[in-house]
Image 1 (cartoon, rainbow, N blue to C red):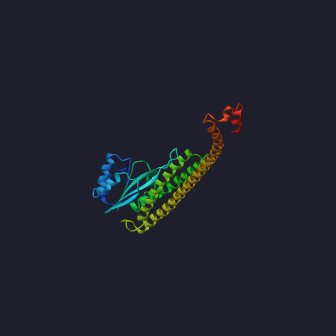
Image 2: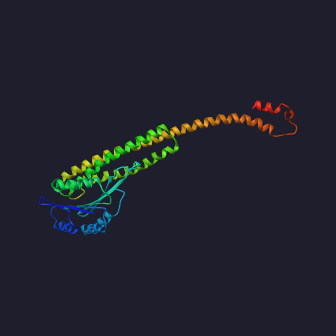
Image 3: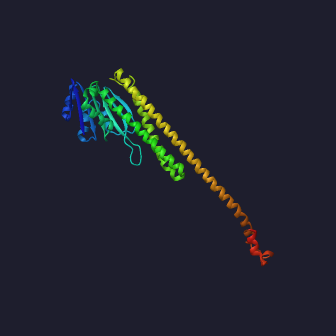
Length: 305
């Protein structure tokens, strides 16, 4: 699905066709934002036209990537960022990929699933085109990333609530089988930490001078994104340490329960060993064992055991 916005001389044009998009791109004037959601063959062809001078950028954009990154292709920048999706009914935390192609006058967003950050900025663009597009593609990109990073925090809070629920269940009933959801949650946190860590590096690069056509003013905005990503990473790291602590506590409880069982079995074994000695001796059935002829030998042996 194509959604394009072109601001030129204070006038916003939206709902552009692919031909209109190429004309706006060829004019080299104003700010052009092209959003490609759930792209098909038409969107892929348009992407190749936009990246005609840099075909490798188009290939990177169309290919999925689980790792946030930023690559510079001359006067075009390709960036992969991951947004958060609402947790599923099972509470599983998932991310959604957003590819961005960024030039001096154009910004292309490419995503296979709806993204709340992009939807929010598209709605705002129709209401306040100058505020969104007035300072060029860098401002549009910041608007998307600003909402995207904000949406990560409720996402992490839901992870904290899920962790509290797992911890309370383990406190009431700690068994080896109940550790499975904790192990799965730990794997999810490790994956999210990897994503946020690389995303933090991307924001750091945007805030420095190595990315072309980023004004010093916009670098301050991207630095703000970096600071929030650092805070987010710290919260996820804290949750991972909490998971590790809960898991170690549960393993300790399970180990203590096992020790109690082993003590009980040891006592039972000790008692049975004495009985086994008596039955073993008289189970040999040697011919010359005087007790075998006793009338009261059987009850005496039972009483002795």
